[in-house]
Image (tube, rainbow, N blue to C red; front, side):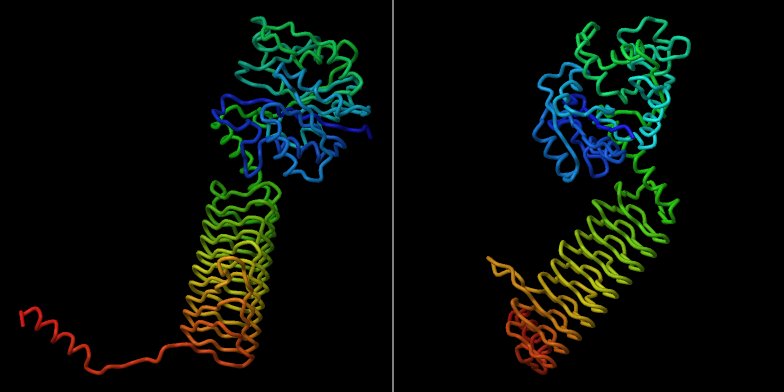
Length: 467
């Protein structure tokens, strides 16, 4: 198999985005635009991937490395914006020694499919020449470079501004995506001159140069797939298409999405069969959802793992949390990073957890905060309970054994332990360890004054009457 490298052009500013942020860094479904063509190149097995950066180069490189920490990346810098050919030429040193094919992609084209690039490489094989390209047919090709054929064979690309009236009538357009033999590429780039209306070095000149030495392969792609992003309206439009693709793939794999138009699911999310996703649910950043899970309306899951049979009720938020089998969460629960629930745990409305390990079958059904806590199996934690884990300087651990009962409106002042089977009476502030099987109560004695209400009313009436 011919060795494959990829060059992804990420140097442009994107003035039409009306933003201080480089165009390729604008997010689409949780990732920068440029992450999508980069991922496609990696999926094809590219052994070297060269993002060519320019505007905000340091920020672009940092973002790309964060999203692909293990990828074989070699960055190249285009110091001046002098056209697409100049941008690709900037990658030559990074690919020194590569003698296979070079895939050329654009960092602002997020909808390109892996299957289309596979077809491009196959077309390159079939043609046997130095280059193959992706084209698309447009009813209104205004502004696009035209694919000019002679006797049915690709002969050249002519940019719209350089077209004759006859050439402007051609509807087959260049998508700007190429597979090129490395030896031909670097030699041809050195020969390109800026003889065009823009005074730029056009990458499209490669096509005519390649056609003089052999057939140019071509593969047709849908216009939606090859569409770039130039402003925030187009950014939103591309996101809708990508979201539709992702949601349809999950539904075909056995997931029920009740309202696909509002379900926000990022690329790469794993969802088991017979799971039900409610309206306006968000599944982000590497979340994994098991089988037969119900995720209620408005819930947001980020980098979380949810095991089989769990029910997440509406408007719950999970961040870097792990949830075991058959748990019930919410509504309006918040599971913060470090939450780890065993099976059959119940966390109800307005319960918040953080760095909390909660054992099998334990329950906290109302208005509770559990932070920096290890909680055993079969515990019952009453409404209004909080772990007081922070002393203003350090965080401390609360530990509950198995079968512990915590009465409503209790405070557990960490560091503190309640042993197996321990009871804490309602309204108690626990500041000392509670041995197993013991009861802790810290209430002021109740005082009852009989007849006090009637006496108060009499006094109030007397004051009102002026007495």
